[in-house]
Length: 196
Ligand code: HEM
Image 1 (spheres, protein in one colour):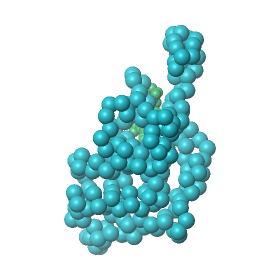
Image 2: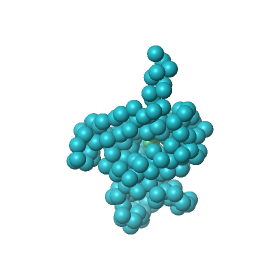
Image 3: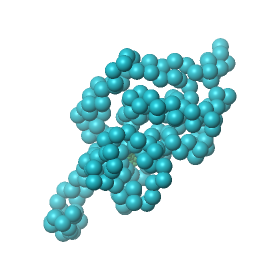
């Protein structure tokens, strides 16, 4: 839910990205039938939007605390056994030495992502204790976001940008919950009239 809220905020603040995502859905799925899980394979720009959202607003910015099972070195520092180790994914995701124009929302940067990205984009952690729910999470977020864009037209409430201030909490929610305007698109009207 947190990831979806941040994703919609980024789309509202970047109307050209919102348009490109809607165009991708319209051209690959259209307005006749609702988007399905199998369609997600054809929505590569949408996947980029989700990666970019998880880069700038990872749902677990410090991942989950780990404990060193033996003495080791991390980034040149000696870490004794039993030390609690926190990984600041939020900072890695915004490090200007790793990302060009690090704080801008650019889904296309994930278009030709190679294996190297896996080491600097780690919203689900890495290695043996990485999130086992990653596949499910990516599908649920992508399917929900695609459905929201296919079924509704989204707009900000006024001219000002959506406030992107981060609130407190382990999952880094927004400081102010998103409020936005949405209008049903043709497919939604069809669904509503079928139910009458
Ligand atoms: C956007 C959604 C999600 C994000 C960003 C996320 C992120 C993470 C992260 C960062 C970790 C810690 C990795 C580490 O220790 O380095 C983790 C662990 C875990 N996640 Fe997720 N997760 C998500 C959704 C899910 C879902 C849908 C499930 C289950 C269906 C799930 C199940 C778990 C479990 C069981 C662990 C503990 C794994 C272990 O310690 O071995 N997560 N997740």
